[in-house]
Image 1 (cartoon, rainbow, N blue to C red):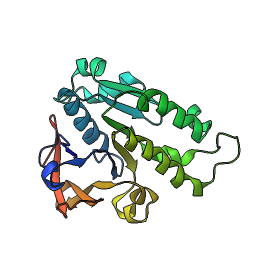
Image 2 (cartoon, one colour):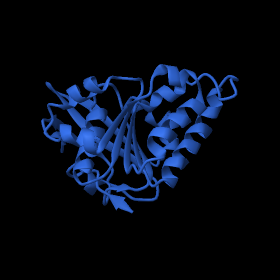
Image 3 (tube, rainbow, N blue to C red):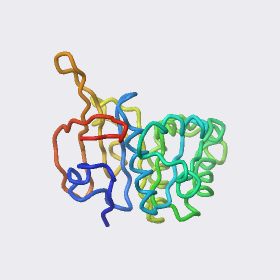
Image 4 (cartoon, rainbow, N blue to C red):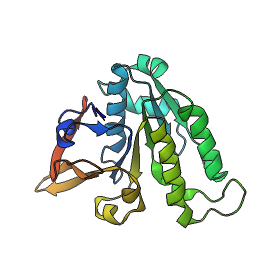
Length: 225
């Protein structure tokens, strides 16, 4: 099943939109537009009737999150009350380990009829230090934990988008690029006296896509190609 990203031209680059259910990684350095891209998709999907959720990791207040979005034309305060749930996973929950994170997501997301979810940022899961039985959580266990978590999203028919602070130069060696179904990189390049933003689709599991770097701008409408 294909659903729209609700970002003009991105659906064309993806040859029909996002595959649902699936996991989408939006990676890049700080300030490249990752959160803006995800929230543009989330708000426009909510306008079409989808029930959506935004999960901030590390924890940020809802006021701070919405204040940053209020300048965009896709933002609608009514949708936050009616169609978009906003959650913040604190460092305390992460410190309690993998089971605490799973229980939080299960209670707030998986038990409800949510269609589209954003996790911002997924990197914080690298900071898990303990398991539910209070033994050390080893780095080698992260992939298995995340894959099991993603399976729960998949079984509930949820499209999961997650941001990650990964520079474009490091994406091919990153653990996260192997775990996600779709990987999209946002980056910048200097061209003479200007700095140009671009988007590049790295992979889409089970589907073809348009390769190459695609220039975009961030305007009051969000990401525009």
